[in-house]
Length: 161
Image (tube, rainbow, N blue to C red; front, side):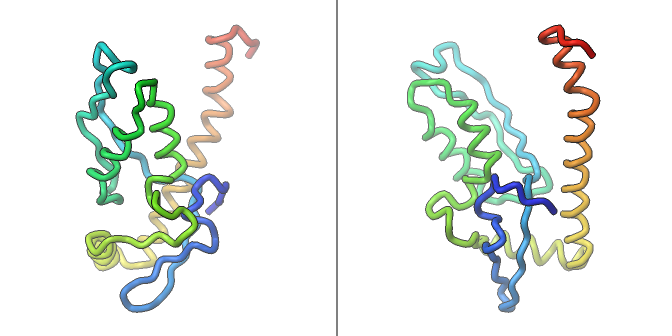
């Protein structure tokens, strides 16, 4: 996997200790997506924050969604906040907000889910799934850069194809 440095919690020195004492290290450049459904009230952004209707993590990989939702709402300060929300999630800073330079420790619920996935798929299969997801993200980015970005620039700014 490629570590582009945008997710500090997953830098090469970050480690996850399993309950058996073994250390697993994983560097990623993108996280599986969140699906956030929201509505903007008429008095947004000056007098009301966005209303988060639902928030969920694809593949159920993140179990602290209520805390994330609370953090996002606390970020609103009477100004537009959607870009800040996107950056907060994109950079992974929500994972370890209190101390970004410390290793990420998962909750017991996360450990149970990980053990269940390892039992269902096996540890090596689970690692292959993470690598496959990363490769798919890279393929999508390459397709965007090669095919869709030039079309978008042509449509938006009239740049030649």
